[in-house]
Length: 586
Image 1 (cartoon, helix red, strand yellow):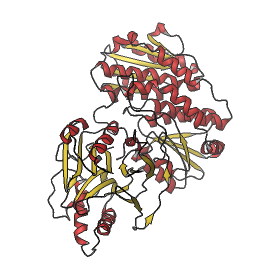
Image 2: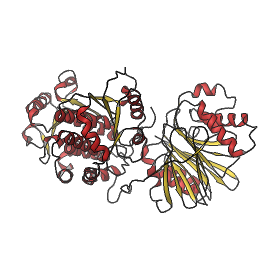
Image 3: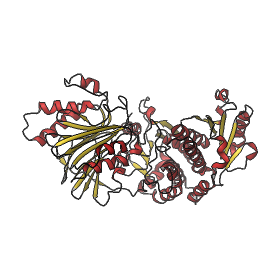
């Protein structure tokens, strides 16, 4: 969830590290800090709030080595003391992840602790191990062995980069379950928690490597050496940096609005490129699995609900959908010939990765739908379906969700031998262009929202409600329309807006029953449908399309409404409070 950046670069290391942090701001954070070598002294500067505050404090420092960090609070409040980097006598570290046994480790360390964080224990433990390995005369070898010993004592997840005062011209990096990418360049080398941090550096950076669990990287300005968990030197396979859509806002006020408007392009690119060898192999096998389970979190889970609908409809096969955070702890019932299909925009979602590992241990085959090439999930699944939404920077998922829906639709269609609908990108573009905020201004002051639908529209309802929660901070709930009268109807009154998604003709009348029930209790009603139902309430009229693909279309006006509601209330829809783009901790 945090952003990590380190670089070895003549004179410009501090500047590059801060630039890298800015590229990682979309991941969510509450404070930022940097450590850099200035002359023979390592300077540490921290700041609560934005990276821009940190940049002012750092100024135009000249440095050859720097490590930097944006923190998203897990242990301890957002304060300067809790901000990274954390230090011991010789080690300065930044850390992403959670150290589960930090209390136990702290109890065995005599050195004083200054922060409330779990991360500080890493610096102190490195120091303790470094002291205990004093018989090793070579400083570089001693540092590497201290890292190895430390990793063997840690429990949890970590991506750590550090500088040692005894050898300050190198950066050391090591990881377990949290992502770290190393980039090799001409006379400069870098490391970051996300490949997007390297945007606009492509002319200088030539090769990218994804560290595997418990790998260690020794990075200098001239060289990168990789080690395995026994300190054997190893080679790591180079990964390709996917061509991403630029993060700049261009003519849009916010990245979220820009990314919604990129949906047609994302649909076109995903539809064109997703049919790789894994897609073809999986679609041929799909009918033969005795059990299919889809796992995901948040928006990805809602995409999974659509996946259940379309796979059951097209394959006539039972499909279950599980929250990844629950799947990893539930009683595991092993079945032969089972597929576990994971959905994750980033490919680094901690709960989803853990669910996949459990599925593999249980003997299930695994597949992933992800938007990030070379991410952790792509390296552990048997089949990978790569969506091509381009880099999604706003925290609230928009174009990536639509591409997940598209991938599931295409997979189900291919497996069942059905023809895939044409022109989906053009229908999406028409939906965006026809959206009118002017007709919805009366709803911008509402504080209580209920989204309802049936079948696949229920998944859209849940996703629409989530978008309002995420970026507008108002109470909103998504329900199956038939469930309103089983308790929730007691909350509906004249202060409520009920948004009904109605795109499936066979249950149109049934969903309208729910509309009549809430109107009878004074609620305002907004209908999202391709059927002309304006007499039932104010309507967002969608362009007609095959009903199975309507969830790709009907969610777009809900995303736009959430965006405008947030922006109208003076909020920043790109960086909602308390949330992070890539949830790499449990």
